[in-house]
Length: 113
Image (cartoon, rainbow, N blue to C red; front, side, top):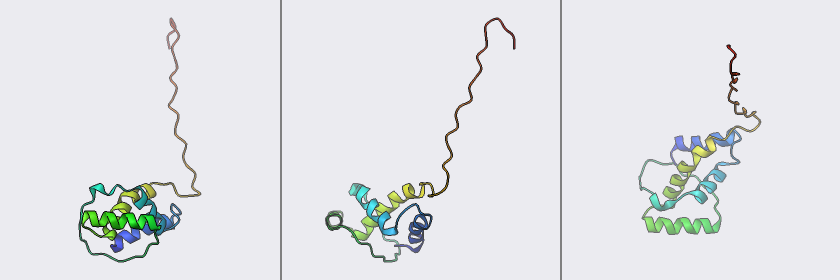
């Protein structure tokens, strides 16, 4: 993976928005629709992630079908999922309640205001 992307993955973990980089990757892979994957080849940095056996089998099968690598599928899934993780509120910070709309006073007929 690219160094900048790996740094971006680490930010939600440091902020307490995710348990680990691996957890972000696993969840992203479980949610991602691989039918629209485009194959690109940027410079990369290698990382290791433990995956459930069935998810790994699905990735290998999809990679063969799409003529790409498992790593590319992982990157595509994580890039699609990461904005959701980044949008989470930081734990321990109060969440601002939604503002109620101001009530309008109703005029009584026949009176001037």
